[in-house]
Image (cartoon, rainbow, N blue to C red; front, side, top):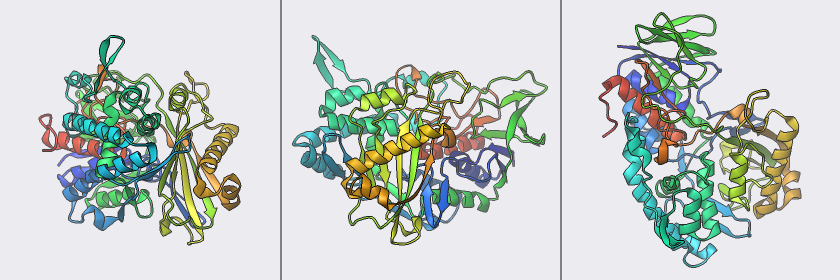
Length: 510
C-alpha cells in the first residue's frame, strides 16, 4: 500500500483519488480552499442556487465509468441525470433562430434545413460525418492513452478536410474558421462551429480543424443536466472518495514538492508541515511549486516529451447570475445562444486581451425547482468567453477583471444583448423589471478556461503528459493531458491512476 498525496480537490484530482483508493493505496487530498470541486462551484442566496462554473454535462460515460469502477452504486443512483431536450436554441445576428434536438443527427439536419434553408442541414450532416472520422482516429491516443513520449505522431490533424480548388491549386481547410468558410459555406453554420471552439477556450481562427470532434461529441452523445446543478456531481464524487476512505485536508496549501533520491518524496504545507509520500499527484497549477531537497536545486516541473508550452494567456468565462421574479414561460429552452454578429472579431478580442462590445452569450434557464425558492421565481445564468485576467503589474496585456467599472459595463452588455435578441425575455425593460439581484463572476475569481487537447501541427494544442521527468510525480486535471473540460478531467484521473497502479507500461483503458 503506497502513500499518495494529491494536491487539489478538483474533479480530475478526486477522480484519481477514488480510483487509487480502490486499488488499495492510502490517499490524502490537500486543498487550499475550504471545499472540493474546483471549477464546479455553487452560489446559494435567498433560495436561489447557481452553478458558478459549467452548467451542463457532456460525455457522462466518463463519470459512469468512475462510479462503476469504484463502488456498487451507479452514477444515476447518486444524482439526478436528465437529458436536455432540445439541446440548444441558437439566435443569429440576422434574426434567424434554430432549435437543435438532442443527440439526433437526422433531427439536427432537418432543423437546420428548416431554419437556414435547404442544403444547410445536409452540409452540417456531412461535416459531422467527417468529424466522426476525426473522432475515430484520435479518440484513443488523445483521450484513452497516456501521452506518448513520441507525441509528434499527433502533429497530423485527424480531420479529413475536403479538397477545394483555389488559385489554380487544391487546398484543404486546416482551421475551424477555414472549415466554416470552405465546407459549411453558410456564415451561420460557420458561426455555430466557431461557437463550439470558443466555448472550449479555443481560438477558431487558429484551432485545428480536428476541433470538429467537439460538436460531434455533443450532438452524438447528448447534453445532460444534473438536478440541483452540476455542483451535485462534485458532491457525489467527493462522497464516493470518502466512502473509499480518501482523506481530505481542506485549508491546506501546498507550497512545494519534496525531492529525495531523485524522486518525489512528499509535499510541504504552508504552515511548514512536511508530509511524506510515495507518489504525488498534482491537480493544481504546478508552476509555483518548486521541487527542493538534498537531490539538488529547485527545478521546473516539466513533463515527459516536453510538448510546447502555450504562450498565450488562456481565456476565461464572464458570468452573470440573475435572480428573477416570475416564472419562465412555457416551452422556454434550457440553453439558448445569442451569437455575435462577427465571430472573427470576437475571437480577435478574446485572444488579443481586449473586451468586445458584441459577445456571444449563452443563456441557461433550468426548469429545476431545486434552483429557485418557488415556482414564482427563476434562476438564469448568462456566460461569455472573454480574455483572461491580467494581474495588475504583471507583464502582458489583458483586462483587469477586478476593475469594478469594467465588470459592471460587461455585465450590462451581456444583459442588454440577451434582452434585445431573445423574445422569451420580453425586451430589456421586461427583463430588468423582473430582476431581484445579480452576481458577477469573472476570470479573476474563476480562473482560466483550459482547452481540451487536440492533434495538430507542432503539437500546439497538446497538454503536458500525466507522468513527469521527476519519478513519483504525476499531473492531473485541465492543465495536463488530455486537457480541459469536465469529461477530459475525469479521463486524466483514470490515466494517472493507471500509471501509478500499473506502472510505466500502462497503455490506457481497453
